[in-house]
Length: 211
Ligand code: AP5
Image (cartoon, rainbow, N blue to C red):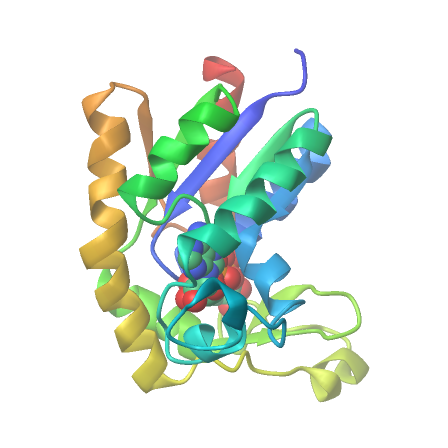
């Protein structure tokens, strides 16, 4: 199979980052993630764009969307350099979905479905290894190595208050994106509420069938 172009959609905490790591390894594609790209540029000065806040970080820590102009440029640049990819975190509103149509074709559009209650548990228990970027969960997926456990950190936007705002923003802005792809008949739904290995089995099978 040529390197597939994969879009992975899902609410905050649905497991997009977790499954994208499996996808990049199995299918030898690049992980293009707007969340990570923006976290590396949280302090970037965007005030000349006449935006409400002066840096991406001020939007992110409130759980709000960073302005389209900033995010579109990041994705356009990343996709122009990638062969196959798994795109994670974009599009988050219908305007971004329309922009993406001008940037590239997609072979597979995956949607990880998870209930709100489970999303809140996952996000408030998530921890990251700052050295490797690996994702853990205090209860569902704790690290085996005590040295790793000691250095784990929580993401700034994983507090309960910000998580609730992120879920609200998802409902308002990103649910219409799910409908956008569903209306075009290309949306592949995966039950994201299962154990990570079972989600992966379904994700892998769906990509192999569709790509
Ligand atoms: P972003 O980084 O994209 O965050 P998100 O979409 O909110 O998604 P997350 O990374 O929180 O969750 P995930 O689905 O990757 O879950 P994970 O695999 O880690 O965006 C952050 C911010 O950046 C936004 O709020 C916005 O401000 C800005 N931004 C980004 N893109 C933008 C855009 N396009 N436009 C405008 N602004 C943008 O899993 C979560 C936890 O659950 C982990 O602990 C994991 O171990 C655990 N877990 C995973 N799968 C399972 C499972 N099956 N069972 C049990 N536990 C599991």
